[in-house]
Amino acid sequence: MTIAITMPGKMGDALYALPLARLLYGINGEKIDFYTSDYCYPLKGLIEYQPYINECIIPADYKVERMDMGVQPWFMPVKDGYTQVYHTGFQGVPDRAIHQYIALQAGYDMPLGISYEYPSLLLREDSKLVGIDNYICIAPRGETTYKQLFNEIAQNTQTVIIGGKGDYTGYGIDMTGVSMLDTLSILSGAKGFVGLMSSQLVLANGFPYPKIAPHDGIHWDMRHVIQTVSNHYPINPSIQEVLALLDRT
Image 1 (cartoon, rainbow, N blue to C red):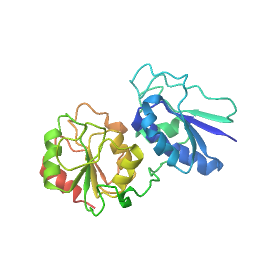
Image 2 (cartoon, rainbow, N blue to C red):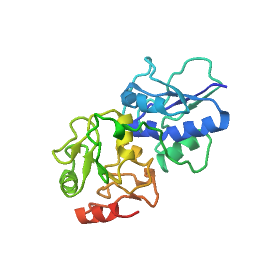
Image 3 (cartoon, helix red, strand yellow):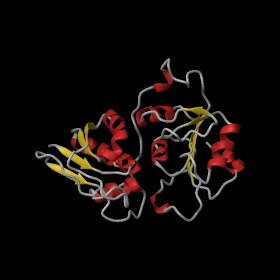
């Protein structure tokens, strides 16, 4: 039996397809081929590092046409020879947590956890984080409504800034622009996470510490978020509110 999963993205959506891949590996005992778009190329190393993945394939004959509802078109071409192919790109607007919606599209209606395998980047001699502990990770996404809040937090805590190149705003230890797999390793050593609802939060959701994603209460579909005791989604919070949430265990 040879199984493939397709998920064109966005990056957070592709990451949320990994719990299904892990489930299928547990059921069938065979590693999964994971198809995604070139938009999600930065995830390739992270995806292939997972022990239940055989290969992350980016088909040359798939072209992104639209960025609504994840990445469209939802259907991706795959090579011949698979006994089962799960096309998990969105054919409609998800009505629940994304990873659960993806699993349901594949016919599996059960609670799935989120976890990742990652290397110990923090022990590398060239890491800026050697000897640093008790830090939080902030994913500021550059110029956003919450830039001032994120900067205030970074000025008042031991903070490591993660995200894309150019997201660093001048405070905290700059670890932006590294690979997604290295970002996962950085997150593994943190005591908490603050950031917008993005791929960085999807990575942070693999860990049990407090995760705070501020929002305005208007522009986010809250049906899609992970609801656990460690996930918090305050509306336009103050720095005091965020720091109090970070102190929760």
